[in-house]
Image 1 (tube, rainbow, N blue to C red):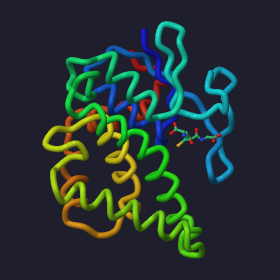
Image 2: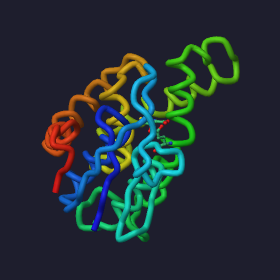
Image 3: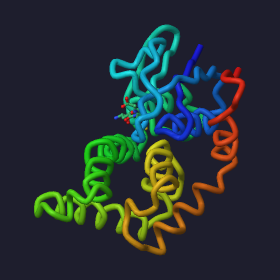
Length: 201
Ligand SMILES: N[C@@H](CCC(=O)N[C@@H](CS)C(=O)NCC(=O)O)C(=O)O
């Protein structure tokens, strides 16, 4: 049994999207979280160590961190094609992009969006290097790994769908966002995102 601890309009929406891509059976537990505007608050039933989302329970095993959940789930559903299993020629690139998303894209993107990168030479260089790498990759092929979508695209595509300004103007990035946001699994996830009855089976 898979249970996603989820809050509407948050990072856990990407895991909803991924679960829909995988064709998984899962439950959603809607929890409250602290919001930037001061609203909301931690939910005692949320097993995440910081009461954040996403958190995933799989038969009693807790998985946290969006990219770890992505790797975990794509390995649980190998036939979905959303992961790259051991021995796959794109395995190295897949794990690299998942780690790069969490370790470079999100911190550098946050530094840029908050204005910090504009006042710090090291952060500015880190942000520019990150943008150059991602844009050059998407100039070469439609998705991060090549011609086929993966869980790494759900991470980056979800972030860009929320905040396109994360990356500079680029025809390739616009095409990438357009392609990913047209996916039926994302439309289903958006419908579940704020379901008012609080539960989804
Ligand atoms: N590194 C974590 C970040 C999770 C995170 O920051 N989640 C936000 C929602 S977008 C949250 O739960 N915020 C509430 C809080 O920090 O108390 C991940 O990617 O899973």
